[in-house]
Image (cartoon, rainbow, N blue to C red; front, side):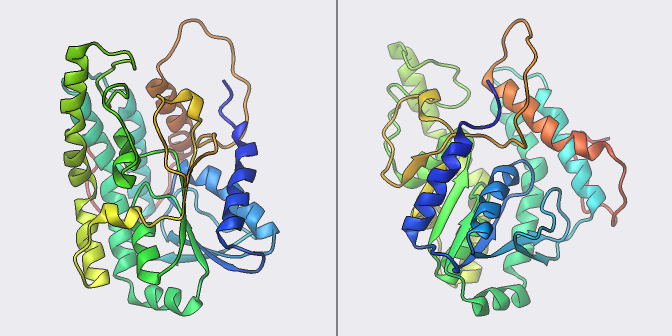
Length: 327
């Protein structure tokens, strides 16, 4: 199956929804992207919106992987506490460890430790941004009409609340489908397998019991991944913040996966499946024997997108922190 869309037809759906949501030609749009492969699909949409007359500002860390300058948008950078070499090392370690051996018992722990290699860096990004008074003042004074973000990391979600802007999310999905937990959309444990269980949608009664018990770990997973952001949001907004409540204020979720490839479940009216993936361009797949799980396919695509460009040596400031597994 080709990596690129049928869903770039889905991009037109996203643009139509953005128009319905209130972004008319000439309006000012603030874009808070996620660096790496996530930016590839968002970049195509941003370029089309720019061609339709929108004034677009993309907010990026000064040290980044793919968030480069473009004639289609204005780029504003903010300082971060690490250099290009540290960024390169962390993405390399993250990509290489996607193929580490894991069992059912340790899969979640291995995945968590691997993800934290880059998530700690993304948290430092967000912390730097939300404590940058000059950038925040500039954003307030710019009077944007809307915010477009990849909510994999909640910095854009917090900014939308701070600036009082309507928002649209574009992304592939949270770990363990936390988007359904955040939005309180139905996600029945009786026939939607939870992460790492490897069950099908036709479970035996003991499997359904196990699936029910695993589902209660989702709150713990949220706490491990996002609790630090609640403290950042509370400091910025000067009130107690429950992060899922901020996520639920979104105008539209543009979900970059195909409904027919997912386990059947109800979706909220503002959840729109537009298909696609985090891919650069369409390629022709060679014929190979055997089969691969979707997790392995995603890991392979991630490595092609992130790790290959990082093989080039590059300079930078001193390392901000050590990277597990990068020695």
